[in-house]
Image (cartoon, rainbow, N blue to C red; front, side, top):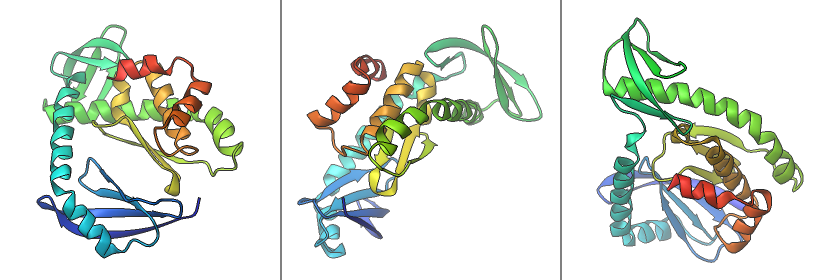
Length: 235
């Protein structure tokens, strides 16, 4: 598929936003996606100009506001994976204990998670947890990606994707085929390992089918027949 990319900035829905534009030869319509950092992703045909895109975004301002409000609600709903009393790690709940220390780190012991913190603050607790969780997810992804690199990328002569971790609440992962980039949410550290397996496959499948059509889910199901169970756990 022939693609090209560009960038622009625009005032929309009360703030200045970065707009990432992907031009695709086969696209007939323009599509908009709101990212959690407030930036906008536009996919459109080659003939579309920046002025056309600006008008399209202005027409969608109310939709952008609604989308961001929904993302805030989702973040509030999903923020219960760690608090002052317990933390959920790979599907298992652990009581937590706090120890004053010179540096911030955590350890998972047999029956509890211990936080060693310079200061007892909510933001430090969360940062320490997700920093440690991201390292574990990186190891798990490295162990798992080889199968999909072979079956999806090399078999179809697609470049291997770059995979990064990001704290996301409105989605579990994202894939930008044109950039060869997959993002995985750090919040998957709260869920059973099968959920990471599903999300990783889901994003790799988008390298072949960029939408959520029947063809897409048939592809996912051909590799993971029980994928719906993971979807149920992630809801």
